[in-house]
Length: 248
Image (cartoon, rainbow, N blue to C red; front, side):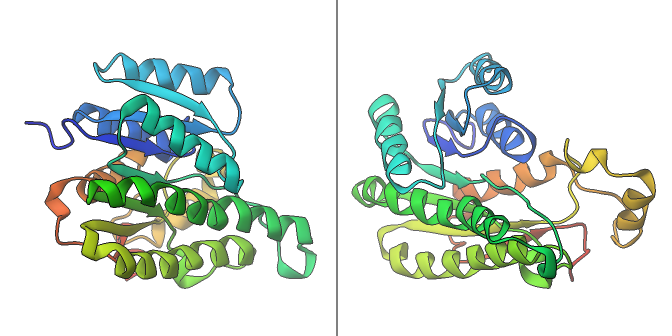
């Protein structure tokens, strides 16, 4: 039996990168997949089609995760279409990097809204469903810089640190109902965004990593699979670093 057979997973911001890798990995393990994106573009539509070709039910929902009412709407739509939500992966996120002395209020507010408020929005919205089911796994995408900090990323680091505290608190509130809440803190992951960095910058980052390579979206997806499945049935309130030993 596949690890997620019969389960439904909702993954936000899943048209590319880590979110797409998680959706693909979950689908291969038998989960029906709902993904969200803020715009209905070709990339988003193509991802939904790719997932559907894996023999599972897949649907895409255009939604702004940073909007409270829209998050409740998309949860209601997914439950109506699939009947349940067993796994929520809060993956949507953005960066607006700059030194604090140059950072605008909008650069701060937009990162906090998309990265942190969205986690509150979707988690609060999905709880009613999971409480009725008396089961569920919530996986929040943090970052190693939420633990270590990083110059030029005070907004991003603050949002990712907030996710860790939120995850610990939620795990204590809903654990008695068999709902687990964990976080993943990726390190230097090679995605479309990081692949555009200058080669010397990528080499500098790699040299800081004990495993001497950048991670892949699949590395993160495998960890998400563990947290989504019954393999981690006694794991809650934890932050798993997927960073090749960079933050140890």
